[in-house]
Image (tube, rainbow, N blue to C red; front, side, top):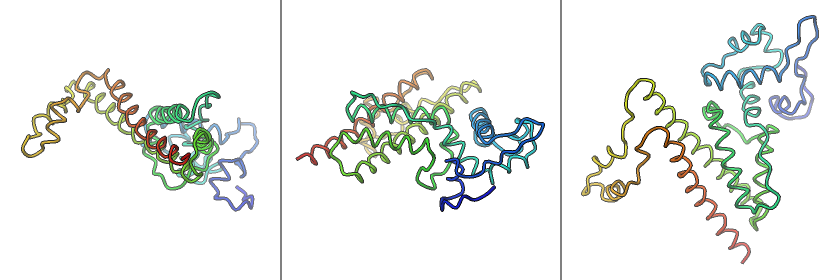
Length: 255
């Protein structure tokens, strides 16, 4: 692969098509970077991040492992490309929607992306987003926040806060869903954590916790099909409080 002299990190050059993508001719149908990345996303979606190895990916594509390295220099580089591809383009902001509705839709869409591709939650956050899709998502939420009087750095911080919230809530729901599924597969009843905490929360030792448990604050304690409803309620409540804070800041900036 040849360097372009852009001064950008090699993986960023690859994300933006600024680096040779290793194409080659020949009688056999050529492998392509897009095909490799698409297969990597599919493999990770099916079996999780642990199932994504260069050898397994090459086998599924019908090529040798070494042939993949004509397109990507390492598995880490491939994962960066796969993440941007999995995230995909951002949702459009409704033209007549206010900034709050735009941020709500954006955060909800981001959480759903992570729920569809839970392996993405296992990837460490080691740098700011640099892929075209990731920057598209960032631009879209900043555009929504353009309806506020916040300073540009405050909009960026608000975008980071909303992105972190969406990712964290997705992680919670993915983990709870997996636990519920494992319990169903093994025939083991899922623990009723609400009842357990209620029993352990001694009123003298944990008075505030005991009050919360007695009021039914710990849920869901029903069947697995209530998990989505529980997640939607928790996500909506927390997101509304974050947006309340941004709204209060906006009012303050407007005087």
